[in-house]
Image (cartoon, rainbow, N blue to C red):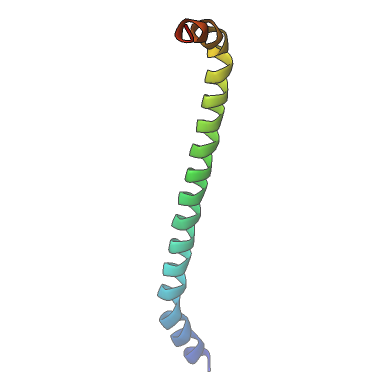
Length: 64
């Protein structure tokens, strides 16, 4: 009985490990994508704050 449990573990161990690696890679990629989007949003909001005065000064020149 003990050897049959070991045989089952030997058979399913690589499958469980492969699934674990797949889930870890998938989670890391999703987290990286989320962090990239958050950082881009912060950059854009900071850019708009820094350039709003210049934007307001330039617009009247193009409206002539």
